[in-house]
Image 1 (cartoon, chains in turn green, cyan):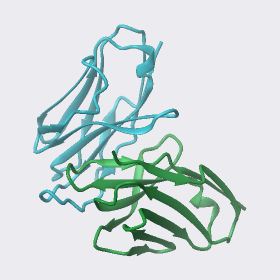
Image 2 (cartoon, chains in turn cyan, purple; image 1 turned 180 degrees about the vertical axis):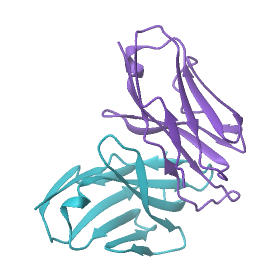
Image 3 (tube, chains in turn green, yellow; image 1 turned 30 degrees about the vertical axis):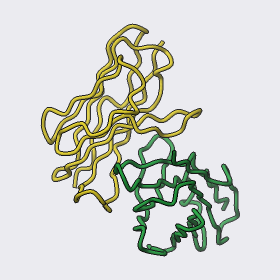
Image 4 (cartoon, one colour; image 1 turned 45 degrees about the horizontal axis):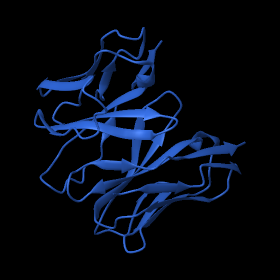
Length: 112
Length: 117
Protein backbone atom coordinates (compact mmCIF):
# COMPACT_ATOMS: atom_id res chain seq x y z
CA UNK A 1 0.00 0.00 0.00
CA UNK A 2 1.40 3.38 -1.05
CA UNK A 3 2.14 5.79 1.78
CA UNK A 4 3.22 9.39 1.30
CA UNK A 5 4.99 11.33 4.03
CA UNK A 6 5.82 15.01 4.17
CA UNK A 7 8.35 16.46 6.57
CA UNK A 8 8.28 18.89 8.26
CA UNK A 9 4.59 19.34 9.09
CA UNK A 10 5.15 23.07 9.56
CA UNK A 11 7.85 25.52 8.62
CA UNK A 12 8.38 29.21 9.36
CA UNK A 13 11.02 31.23 7.52
CA UNK A 14 11.87 34.91 7.00
CA UNK A 15 11.08 36.51 3.69
CA UNK A 16 13.73 36.07 1.01
CA UNK A 17 14.97 32.71 2.21
CA UNK A 18 15.31 29.75 -0.13
CA UNK A 19 13.61 26.63 1.22
CA UNK A 20 13.03 22.96 0.51
CA UNK A 21 9.96 20.89 1.26
CA UNK A 22 10.31 17.12 1.37
CA UNK A 23 8.06 14.29 0.25
CA UNK A 24 8.73 10.56 0.47
CA UNK A 25 6.74 7.60 -0.81
CA UNK A 26 7.00 3.87 -0.14
CA UNK A 27 6.15 2.32 -3.53
CA UNK A 28 8.28 3.39 -6.47
CA UNK A 29 5.71 2.11 -9.01
CA UNK A 30 4.34 5.56 -9.76
CA UNK A 31 3.68 7.32 -13.01
CA UNK A 32 3.63 10.89 -11.78
CA UNK A 33 4.06 13.06 -8.72
CA UNK A 34 2.24 16.32 -8.21
CA UNK A 35 2.75 19.23 -5.88
CA UNK A 36 -0.28 21.27 -4.85
CA UNK A 37 -0.82 24.42 -2.85
CA UNK A 38 -3.81 24.91 -0.55
CA UNK A 39 -4.80 28.27 0.90
CA UNK A 40 -7.08 28.40 3.97
CA UNK A 41 -10.71 27.71 3.07
CA UNK A 42 -9.82 26.95 -0.52
CA UNK A 43 -9.30 23.96 -2.74
CA UNK A 44 -5.98 22.70 -4.04
CA UNK A 45 -4.08 24.39 -6.84
CA UNK A 46 -1.74 22.29 -8.94
CA UNK A 47 1.79 23.73 -8.95
CA UNK A 48 3.94 21.17 -10.72
CA UNK A 49 3.50 17.70 -12.18
CA UNK A 50 6.52 15.45 -12.74
CA UNK A 51 6.11 12.41 -14.94
CA UNK A 52 7.82 9.24 -13.77
CA UNK A 53 10.33 9.49 -16.63
CA UNK A 54 11.34 13.01 -15.61
CA UNK A 55 13.76 14.18 -12.94
CA UNK A 56 12.48 17.70 -12.36
CA UNK A 57 10.05 20.42 -13.35
CA UNK A 58 10.34 24.17 -12.95
CA UNK A 59 7.80 26.97 -12.82
CA UNK A 60 9.00 30.43 -11.92
CA UNK A 61 10.54 30.34 -8.45
CA UNK A 62 9.46 26.72 -7.94
CA UNK A 63 11.49 23.65 -8.80
CA UNK A 64 10.38 20.10 -8.05
CA UNK A 65 12.62 17.07 -8.31
CA UNK A 66 11.82 13.37 -8.37
CA UNK A 67 14.02 10.39 -7.45
CA UNK A 68 11.91 7.28 -7.92
CA UNK A 69 14.59 4.86 -6.82
CA UNK A 70 14.86 6.45 -3.39
CA UNK A 71 11.17 7.31 -3.16
CA UNK A 72 11.74 11.02 -2.70
CA UNK A 73 10.67 14.36 -4.11
CA UNK A 74 11.58 17.88 -3.10
CA UNK A 75 9.92 21.21 -3.78
CA UNK A 76 12.39 24.08 -3.85
CA UNK A 77 11.06 27.61 -3.40
CA UNK A 78 13.51 30.39 -4.22
CA UNK A 79 13.42 33.83 -2.64
CA UNK A 80 10.32 33.11 -0.55
CA UNK A 81 7.63 35.79 -0.18
CA UNK A 82 4.79 36.24 2.34
CA UNK A 83 2.38 35.33 -0.45
CA UNK A 84 3.92 31.86 -0.52
CA UNK A 85 2.40 31.15 2.90
CA UNK A 86 0.09 28.16 2.45
CA UNK A 87 -0.05 24.40 2.88
CA UNK A 88 1.87 22.43 0.27
CA UNK A 89 0.77 18.90 -0.52
CA UNK A 90 2.56 16.20 -2.41
CA UNK A 91 0.54 13.52 -4.23
CA UNK A 92 1.66 10.36 -5.95
CA UNK A 93 -0.15 8.98 -8.99
CA UNK A 94 -0.55 5.21 -8.99
CA UNK A 95 0.64 3.23 -11.99
CA UNK A 96 -2.36 0.94 -11.80
CA UNK A 97 -5.41 2.95 -10.97
CA UNK A 98 -4.94 6.63 -11.75
CA UNK A 99 -5.57 7.49 -8.13
CA UNK A 100 -3.63 10.17 -6.28
CA UNK A 101 -2.34 9.38 -2.80
CA UNK A 102 -1.71 12.54 -0.78
CA UNK A 103 0.72 13.36 1.97
CA UNK A 104 -0.45 15.27 5.02
CA UNK A 105 1.12 18.49 3.80
CA UNK A 106 3.64 21.05 5.04
CA UNK A 107 2.24 24.34 6.30
CA UNK A 108 4.59 27.15 5.35
CA UNK A 109 4.66 30.59 6.90
CA UNK A 110 6.88 33.25 5.35
CA UNK A 111 7.34 36.21 7.67
CA UNK A 112 7.83 39.73 6.27
CA UNK B 1 -12.36 29.83 -17.78
CA UNK B 2 -14.70 28.46 -15.13
CA UNK B 3 -13.05 26.05 -12.75
CA UNK B 4 -14.65 23.16 -10.88
CA UNK B 5 -17.81 24.44 -9.23
CA UNK B 6 -19.14 22.92 -6.02
CA UNK B 7 -22.31 23.65 -4.12
CA UNK B 8 -23.17 24.39 -1.45
CA UNK B 9 -20.04 25.97 0.02
CA UNK B 10 -21.25 25.33 3.54
CA UNK B 11 -23.83 22.89 4.89
CA UNK B 12 -24.95 22.52 8.47
CA UNK B 13 -27.55 19.89 9.22
CA UNK B 14 -28.70 17.57 11.95
CA UNK B 15 -27.71 13.96 12.33
CA UNK B 16 -29.92 11.61 10.34
CA UNK B 17 -30.71 14.06 7.57
CA UNK B 18 -29.87 13.42 3.94
CA UNK B 19 -27.05 15.54 2.52
CA UNK B 20 -26.42 16.08 -1.18
CA UNK B 21 -23.24 17.71 -2.45
CA UNK B 22 -22.98 18.85 -6.06
CA UNK B 23 -20.14 19.27 -8.50
CA UNK B 24 -19.77 20.68 -12.01
CA UNK B 25 -16.42 19.66 -13.53
CA UNK B 26 -14.42 21.69 -16.02
CA UNK B 27 -15.86 21.42 -19.50
CA UNK B 28 -13.95 18.87 -21.58
CA UNK B 29 -12.61 16.94 -18.60
CA UNK B 30 -13.58 13.28 -18.56
CA UNK B 31 -12.47 12.25 -15.05
CA UNK B 32 -14.08 13.36 -11.82
CA UNK B 33 -12.91 12.71 -8.27
CA UNK B 34 -14.57 13.12 -4.86
CA UNK B 35 -12.28 13.64 -1.86
CA UNK B 36 -12.82 14.16 1.85
CA UNK B 37 -10.41 16.21 3.97
CA UNK B 38 -10.16 16.08 7.78
CA UNK B 39 -7.46 17.09 10.21
CA UNK B 40 -7.05 13.51 11.40
CA UNK B 41 -6.96 11.67 8.08
CA UNK B 42 -5.88 14.33 5.62
CA UNK B 43 -7.15 14.14 2.04
CA UNK B 44 -8.80 10.85 1.09
CA UNK B 45 -10.13 9.78 -2.28
CA UNK B 46 -13.72 8.54 -1.96
CA UNK B 47 -14.61 7.66 -5.55
CA UNK B 48 -13.68 8.57 -9.07
CA UNK B 49 -15.41 8.45 -12.43
CA UNK B 50 -14.06 8.18 -15.93
CA UNK B 51 -16.42 9.03 -18.80
CA UNK B 52 -19.28 9.13 -16.27
CA UNK B 53 -18.60 5.54 -15.13
CA UNK B 54 -17.50 4.83 -11.53
CA UNK B 55 -14.03 3.27 -11.73
CA UNK B 56 -12.99 2.92 -8.10
CA UNK B 57 -15.26 3.42 -5.10
CA UNK B 58 -13.07 1.60 -2.60
CA UNK B 59 -12.66 4.80 -0.61
CA UNK B 60 -16.36 5.21 0.06
CA UNK B 61 -16.55 4.69 3.82
CA UNK B 62 -19.96 3.10 4.18
CA UNK B 63 -23.15 2.27 2.36
CA UNK B 64 -24.53 5.56 3.64
CA UNK B 65 -22.40 7.22 0.97
CA UNK B 66 -23.33 7.13 -2.69
CA UNK B 67 -22.20 9.06 -5.77
CA UNK B 68 -23.62 9.51 -9.22
CA UNK B 69 -22.55 11.11 -12.45
CA UNK B 70 -25.58 11.21 -14.76
CA UNK B 71 -23.75 13.24 -17.42
CA UNK B 72 -20.37 14.76 -18.18
CA UNK B 73 -21.18 18.07 -16.51
CA UNK B 74 -22.68 17.05 -13.19
CA UNK B 75 -22.03 14.77 -10.23
CA UNK B 76 -23.53 14.34 -6.78
CA UNK B 77 -22.28 12.84 -3.54
CA UNK B 78 -25.04 11.83 -1.17
CA UNK B 79 -24.91 10.85 2.49
CA UNK B 80 -28.00 9.23 3.94
CA UNK B 81 -28.37 9.17 6.89
CA UNK B 82 -25.69 11.62 7.94
CA UNK B 83 -23.68 11.25 11.16
CA UNK B 84 -21.49 13.72 13.12
CA UNK B 85 -18.33 11.81 12.05
CA UNK B 86 -19.12 12.72 8.44
CA UNK B 87 -18.23 16.34 9.23
CA UNK B 88 -15.39 17.32 6.91
CA UNK B 89 -14.57 19.34 3.83
CA UNK B 90 -15.57 17.51 0.66
CA UNK B 91 -13.72 18.35 -2.54
CA UNK B 92 -14.52 17.57 -6.12
CA UNK B 93 -11.74 17.56 -8.73
CA UNK B 94 -11.63 16.93 -12.46
CA UNK B 95 -9.00 16.18 -15.08
CA UNK B 96 -8.60 14.95 -18.64
CA UNK B 97 -7.69 11.26 -18.66
CA UNK B 98 -5.65 10.11 -21.65
CA UNK B 99 -5.60 6.39 -21.26
CA UNK B 100 -4.05 4.32 -18.52
CA UNK B 101 -1.12 6.62 -17.82
CA UNK B 102 -2.67 10.03 -17.44
CA UNK B 103 -0.32 12.90 -16.83
CA UNK B 104 -2.79 15.73 -16.57
CA UNK B 105 -3.10 17.59 -13.26
CA UNK B 106 -6.30 17.47 -11.28
CA UNK B 107 -8.21 20.73 -10.82
CA UNK B 108 -10.03 21.17 -7.52
CA UNK B 109 -13.16 23.04 -6.54
CA UNK B 110 -13.26 25.16 -3.38
CA UNK B 111 -15.00 22.40 -1.44
CA UNK B 112 -18.12 22.00 0.67
CA UNK B 113 -17.62 22.41 4.40
CA UNK B 114 -20.08 19.96 5.97
CA UNK B 115 -21.05 20.03 9.64
CA UNK B 116 -23.35 17.38 11.05
CA UNK B 117 -24.75 18.28 14.46
